[in-house]
Image (cartoon, rainbow, N blue to C red; front, side):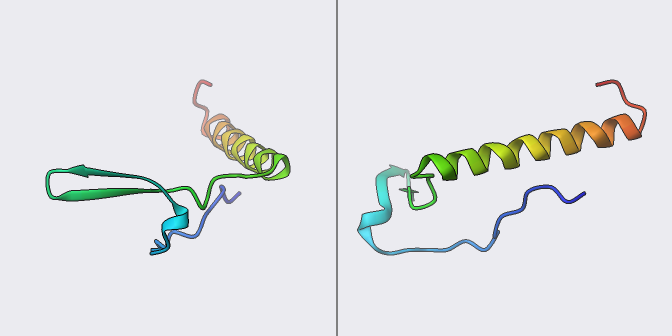
Length: 69
């Protein structure tokens, strides 16, 4: 069974409306992008279901290998 996957390609948005915070550590600038944060109850429930499915998939694989869970 395939576990939850997301698009791994990093998307860089230069619009300030998506940046919630900006930090600087030495020469490194860290921008906190909130565009991927769930905004509705339905989105949060979908993410919760995907997390639960991924967790159970891991448990099923461990049981199939005979590992203690």
